[in-house]
Image (cartoon, rainbow, N blue to C red; front, side, top):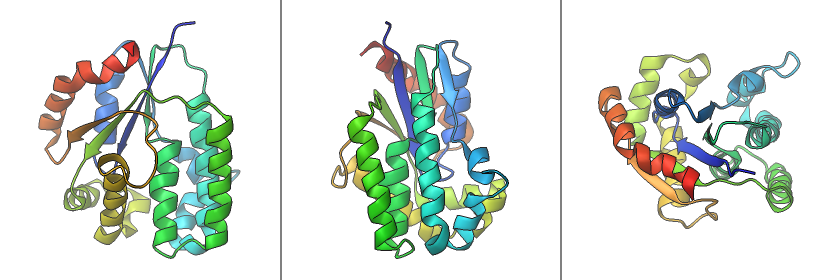
Length: 215
């Protein structure tokens, strides 16, 4: 059986993940899998994503349990393309977003403990291969400016402080390597630039990124 490469595109909210995925989607042997946000907005008629933003202490575990399930489903989905490119991962769901809820005091310790047990069981018992993490490294200020410009409904309530916390957790995980184990090597791409310059950077790093499929 031919080995299929898995590349995770990681970064803060509005770091340019969509631009990156759209760029590589044009490549014939790449299948792009975006975050399953439509699922998070509608679970049998309920919107746990909106509920979580309104009252994280009550609904954080509800959303994050479902995020963990849907991201696992994304990792395990049957795909024939040689390269699978995923927006974020089950790892950043835990190390960045669950961690942030807990550290900011918005997730009770018992919820965090239960989610952590689930995550540890999944990652111990189920093979979730990742060949490369592409980290789109941005400043929280840049992300905040982009958020204001793109006007997505759930994002209107996101303050700069939240983006700063997410940024710090990403830096701790992927740059300082002092928070959690890395599932794969990391390629850092500075992503504070305008879309044109970003496309240029993706072009320049194209071989490096797609080389994950030859490892």
